[in-house]
Length: 390
Ligand code: C5P
Image (cartoon, rainbow, N blue to C red):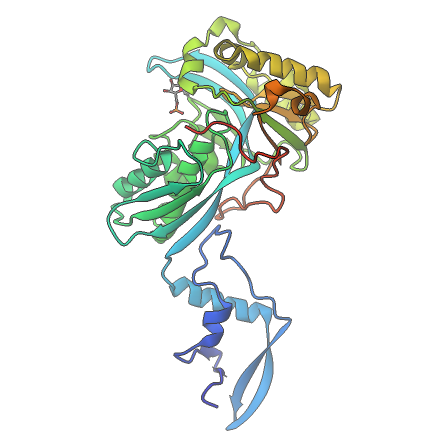
């Protein structure tokens, strides 16, 4: 009898040495955690019940067990958290003005996609963050946006928590995919989970613009019309089907965002109203004529081989892609409509080192972080990440 779990007056009493709790429940269950969010899947769970001094076995339901597990988990302190940190593409990107502060006003359809990094956070016993990663060349100090984000969070909230962070990098940098911006948004989300969600998502979004123009977008639900220098985010219900496959092709050479913007000239831009582009996409889907990126001309100046790559993908695709365009400030070329790159990318030595990945659009649920899709991070090449990391 001593080892039984009792249900009395709707309360479940856990014996102090509760093997059920320890072996079956995750240690913590924060919002959006990818590795620890596992509901229990017993069809009917036996529970021993004391009634009129007789012991009878009754069966409890999944629902009730999970509710109790949730209640217990809420009490448990958070010590580790693993989150997916997905990247984005800009389906179109119009630049409308150069501003006095040196930045440019833009109007762009940003969409989160299924390619992403995985970041593991655990509470540090000291008052120092420690960052490690799986690829060489990533700065691990204050220059890294993850550390910047954690410093920002502590400054804004007074939190005294520091972290050990491991960044499993899949998204190449200097790619126009917002990989670093996503890492920063993910770190702010994580720090807030460890701090009992004391800040609202809106606050995290506002604060994040202090450390990068593209970070606030990741606090949308995955699809957004962004204006200003990128930080004015209007959440959209996804204007495109999430099932559309795409291929990402990034040459080894990276494009520096600052360098691309430096070469940008307003007289080289399209004049089409970005809201018309958005409307066309919502009505008719993605096609070549709506995927306008005003940063292509300056990026092609920085990296002339990129212009050729885009052209060759269009030609070789022979209708395989609904649209081919550069994302952000480059150097990734996106082919929408097929997960496969054109054959020449495999055949020619010049493209031996390109980064290739298939992907699709994704979104997130309210109050949860992005989840890693089962099919995420499928690389089409033997070398999983052949892009450069800085
Ligand atoms: O804000 P973020 O650090 O991502 O921007 C990197 C650089 O890109 C900025 O220093 C600026 O030169 C340029 N930029 C811009 N206009 C934007 C976004 C970025 O000129 N809207």
